[in-house]
Image (cartoon, rainbow, N blue to C red; front, side, top):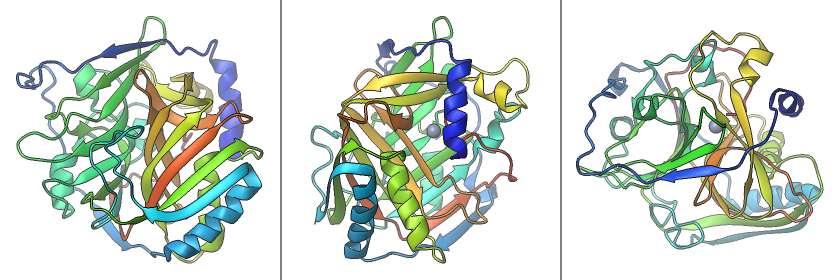
Length: 356
Ligand code: ZN
């Protein structure tokens, strides 16, 4: 509810919703060298990392929990257990085919590292971090987070979607930033040797193996919760004593969604909710949009983001908030429960606004 109030109040601070975009291809990948932007990433061996074994409910149990919850929020709901389709194919076109093989969630850093001013030293590298967590070459990593600020010298929204490899990972992670001149979305694909990311990320790691997943199709939203929140709240109700977490992907097939992105670096520290909100740009983006992220049953003492998803089309992307066309919206998602959770570099508890 708090988030809804904040989102609503945000509208007051945003004069106009912009959706024009600029697409830029990555620079010449082979010759991409870290020069001006050679900022060191944190060594995972020196970071505080806590691991938790997640409770993994049977898929049939999750199916019935999601079915029941989604039916209260959407007019048309189908939940099935299926073999994971090849996610490299359209419309998802992800970097790897499956979600199976050592499914793991990792939450790194947190929004608290952004307020009142961005802690620029909070810069990580998924390649070294994944290896440290037992996910080496060929690991498939997806999720929502802050992109590598030195790449553009500004705040970046990241849609991580990468197969890690040596020496070059796949050039498939999307990033979005806010054009300072007109607030439009600047959309890009990161080169394969840019595997850094900044102060917060909610990631799903796997070996991209085939396997059974939960397929969710819904149409026409009739309730207040968004697609993911509906399932997250159902998990929270059902598993109050266990931590359950899922990763995967979903497609906004029809309709439009409200998304957000952080504007450029702050000139002055942002302390009040009004000051923080003024740094966020809102957009309305059109389907088809592919989303990547995670959701968990509870915040727990690890101060987790219970749901964090970013979505992108071929021209724009950002932090997913909610669809704005409930009557015509359609979603299709594939999700799988993870077995292990890693909490990496947990910040001290602070106030979150939760919309970027
Ligand atoms: Zn976000």
